[in-house]
Image 1 (cartoon, chains in turn orange, cyan, green):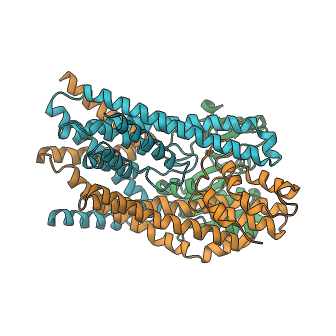
Image 2 (tube, helix red, strand yellow):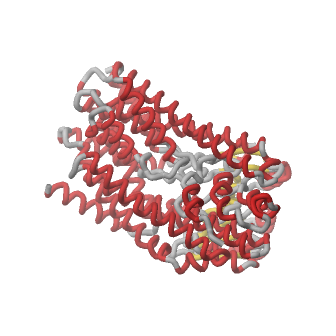
Image 3 (cartoon, helix red, strand yellow):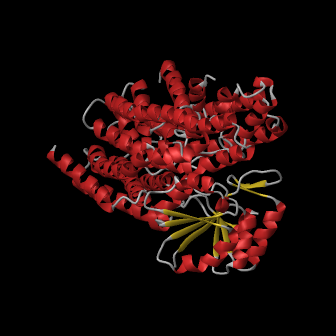
Length: 245
Length: 224
Length: 157
């Protein structure tokens, strides 16, 4: 049995292409697992293959960068002769915890760190070089995590939880969180200096006031409004005031 | 704007929009990247970078979990660059960010529309899906990607239109332009600060991490 | 008062709960209330990897949970209770009047369920169960993330 992992890895890049309310990543998960279940008993016309494909197209949602862990493990479980009920349980149970792990690793870990690298570089080098640094830093992790995840999932099958709890990933998540917070801290004054370099001191003080007011308002008064709408509201008011005044 | 520039921005915007969720997520959707490259296409990467930085600060407070709603700041940054490039000095930054935020928010609504349409499509093909029909799965998936590509292209075009309008409607006084830039920067910094605070709590990292970072960054800025 | 959140979510432990709500509520303990998971150690191991190293997870059946609610509410441990479906929620709340507020965070598409919010699909029986709970004085609202809008039960049906 020669697993078509490369093909599955490429398809995992478009996991969220048909994201929808009903099944979220379900259709994409079926597209991604397809190369790994082609050689189930009966081949692509067989009942096993169709049933596995139908299962995979059901409701599914996890962190896209780690999705390969789930896809690989479920595909392996389909081959291993585990009871169907266990395959289904694996598929439905793993998406949430894996998503939580991946969300912490990427969205509140690697990404803010790379964004801060980009922001700091923007003050040091040519803008396009800063962009390249941002993308290179992030995608080094992106490619490594995706490929490692798919292969690790495929190796472990139903033992995927034991594998993950022993893996470097859990340890990485522990230190990447504080690192992300630290790097946002560094990036804040650097970005502030860069953006306000042309402002007078009084305008700078005003900007700092607006910043604190925004953070306080969004935390205490209206957490559900979202920064984009707060920004549109604030800037719209300034524009209108500017016209009237 | 030259026709080639417009085509370049439309193509870039389409890829940026697809990168948010549908394809690969290599982070060209991040405003810093999307804005700077859009600026470069317009011949002014530095201005693109400036609006990109402000919108990047906004984007630092977003947790793009699967089903949650979030603005498309990448598409916003493309439009913001288009609005800011060419405007003199401080006039560009604030106005660019206004346009960027509106497009980012429109992008969020667009995502909901696309996902609603794809949901209906999936519902219509329930029987074939339950039978595990491969070609149905492939077609549904490709149509989903197609819808998102359409969203990205349409919103980029809309953003370029908005940027054009913004150039006519830009503030007439320096005072308003400065106020606009200052408020845009302030709201952005405040949002990123809040993002840092939330992350500190979420990962149970101590507050000292955030404080240490801010102190270190400040020292670095002062020393330079 | 340390029962921070009682949430119906068929994904149980996932990013929205651990990261999204975690950022605001700072929980020490997640309680997974599900009769099947409570008996399946292999499945529990999967859910355990979803939380932070400094957080605990407890798995209980609905009936055991009803007896423990009082203990969680009075402990100094900040607790998030996760229930997988409306059926279990109904049984839990009927047996545990300490619970006054319930968050609907994710019930997804299945057979006869209809869309009420993008993350909330309910069939007629589940709607009736929720209305009955509301009639008993429970405060029921839907909200996937703390940064999203909260929708009260009467507004979403």
